[in-house]
Image (cartoon, rainbow, N blue to C red; front, side, top):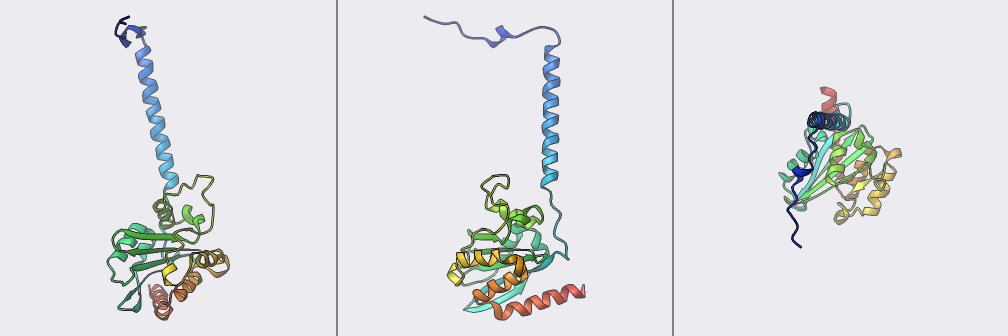
Length: 215
């Protein structure tokens, strides 16, 4: 049996005023959606860490086997992507590492080896709602803070990023869990000691803090 082609216009309700009602509803729904998006944007917006919040931003790398520690611009403490870009410009037999300590409460580490091999971690995901660079780490790792499986605090990320330099994933995680007692600046010191960069680290950090005092 051949059926006639269905024409949706045959079922159109032509009562006066219904098109206007639909238009008003659709416009109102769009406005509500825009308002919701604006509220979400405001909720997600975080203030940059201030000079008082930033303990230090440093880079570590080895060239011809020589361990080198250099200070980086404090502004990089608010932008993981730019931190990674700056690390990629540094020489290094095994890539370069960036360490960011904020308010002696949270440490962010990034390691780059070539243009595509990037590893990141933070000592405490709790601060993703406080500091933009910690939120950047969460975004880089594609973690969903609203997911029940996402931890509310503690270390997340590539905790094995120093495994080839003598600091295992398990040991780094244990250090991070002690951070409440250590402070993130002391945690960073323990990390650089474990990967044998400590000879130049203390001097650079002292100069970093001296420079802040001078400002």
